[in-house]
Length: 172
Image 1 (cartoon, rainbow, N blue to C red):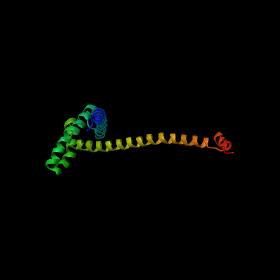
Image 2 (cartoon, rainbow, N blue to C red; image 1 turned 180 degrees about the vertical axis):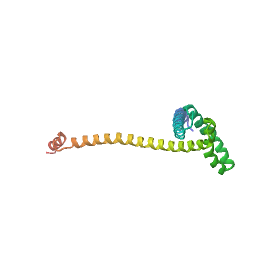
Image 3 (cartoon, rainbow, N blue to C red; image 1 turned 90 degrees about the vertical axis):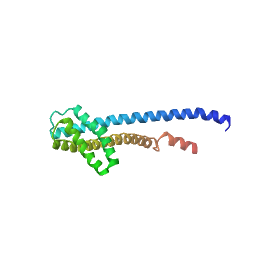
Image 4 (tube, rainbow, N blue to C red; image 1 turned 45 degrees about the vertical axis):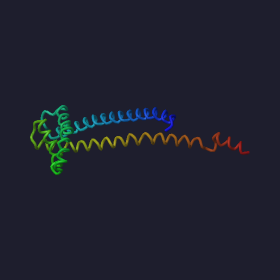
């Protein structure tokens, strides 16, 4: 390989490595922000489920603790069970949140099951609501700009505009 090519490729690889590192850092930051948002989101869903079931002494801290246990510890347990015995992992996927709710809120198992089910429905409802709001927000903005651009083009292309008169003069 010629020396000129080596001299060119070494700085280029450093630049590309820096760009890749910056992209990786950005991806990790976006993932962490998204994870924090989802933790708060599911905590609010857990609070809604606990409120509907009428669990006593329900606070944001207890809902956050139950949600964090479910996400971090519950998924580890379900993952290990899935490797060992998959049917048991499916049962644990639905049973572990109920156990965590019963343990954190100190309520009956029946209330924990209903709170868990209602928190799933609340999370799905909140996701659909955010999706619809997002669609509405992104639908309104581009259409207004497109209509304004179309209106400007239509106004400027009338036969009485100076553009058409200038073209008529040059063609004669």
